[in-house]
Image 1 (cartoon, protein in one colour):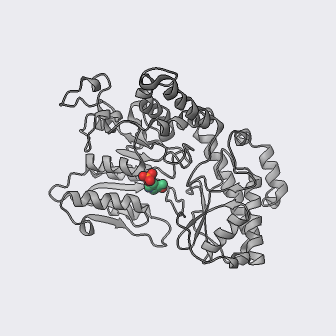
Image 2: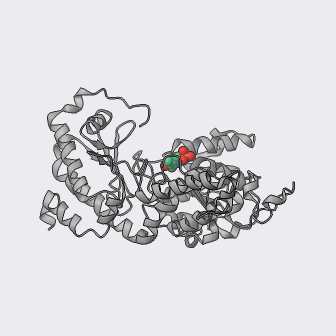
Length: 425
Ligand SMILES: *Cc1c(COP(=O)(O)O)cnc(C)c1O
């Protein structure tokens, strides 16, 4: 088999033996297109659509009583979905809550944990982190009257693509109060060794939190066992919760009872919330870090979408994802060698759910791909992210995608487009 490992026949064999193949039928695949952008916005499934419509209906039929009645009483949704996301991140049921967005959860967690004192005044991050996370950290540092230039340390990358864990651990000095790192880097897809990083931070008495936006639903985690202090994520990428779906956060139970930096009434103990006291009785678990009224209609699709992750478990999803990206790497190597692409992601198992193909004409290649019906994801200045998603992409999709890239390069049709990005890229 290995000999033919980049052929259409081989793709078909892999699809026939794919235990997850039937899940593809559950999704609305854009017609006539090959969707390779599930790491930016996951697709709608019939189950997510169903639960969204059910909650819309509960509003229609029950009005205010929807908070406590119907199939999914809104008042408890954030906790229920937290419990259901807990296995995806390796947290206990009480350690996870569905709330906020990646960025607002980061603000909440930094506001809760960042207490610059004496020598320990700095936040340790990395120079490849997603801009929103960096903006949030800079603004939190300013709120303490400190200068982000001095108090935000960004660990350097040698190749501009990946990070070296030993270097990060070396940067965990006595000046560091808090560490924020990605689990999977949004460009190169590198999976950071969260276990080793958490251990090193724990040993030095530094609080460590991870941004799981690109890993939740793509790779398994054991946050509790690893000793991570907290984590936060979005649900519209690999979890297919829909545009702007509600995010999640993990709070290690050793911090239960710690006062939220940004308080609001939905962080209350639920039995006390409607006593309307001016002294807050906070929830005793991760629920304490909620702020205001949950965005019910943006939680609703998750009720259906998460079922698929529960049925399969992350091990199977990760195994297929690795096979898909390996097959894509084989095809790229066999078909595109003469076109000056390079692979930006780690090629071993420390790659996450997407690949990064680098080319100086990346922006126009992406436009040509879209015109040919392949939906990629451009990342400036020279990156093409391709995410074959275990739940809805086939091996044949992968084969087709690489064939279409080859055609664009061979016929040079990318030259019909300007080499610049669109507004949303
Ligand atoms: C997608 C993503 C975000 C987006 O943050 P939102 O608050 O959901 O807009 C932030 N950080 C990382 C690493 C991401 O991948």
